[in-house]
Image (cartoon, rainbow, N blue to C red; front, side, top):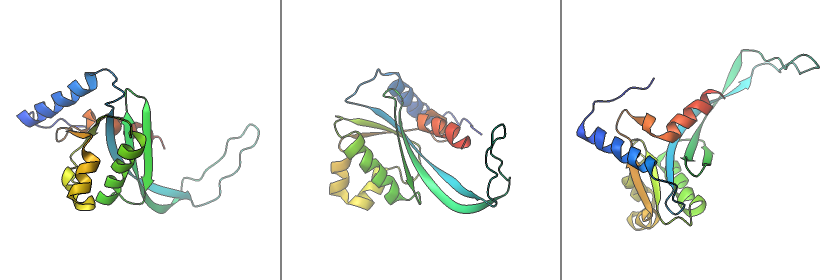
Length: 171
């Protein structure tokens, strides 16, 4: 369920920042990349499915066995039409830093500046990068990154949140 938080000055400022960012035309040297992560329960069949035959679809039992969880890091560049997804065992600060490193050093290595749209999860701030990489390496990594945060209780302004919510729900 989506809800709109209290319309404080900070809420409005962050919302208008994101809306302005989204309104800019495509700038290949300055991509806008929306990030999110989703935990996903892993399931396996409790009984073997009955195979498909001509005129009969595969038949699955509704019972399942829980097989743990995984995390999906999702990066969506709406105007560039690019999606990057990495599956990890967990959703730790180290996993997030590694994902952003991959984006900045591999996927967007040639970009002059990368605008990262994020929610307010505790792992999404520069401090986490400094804790994981050290101040000097974190500054070097993030010199081309510009963080844009959604207002609190407004993750719906993050396009990765919207996109991943729709396709993960259908899995």
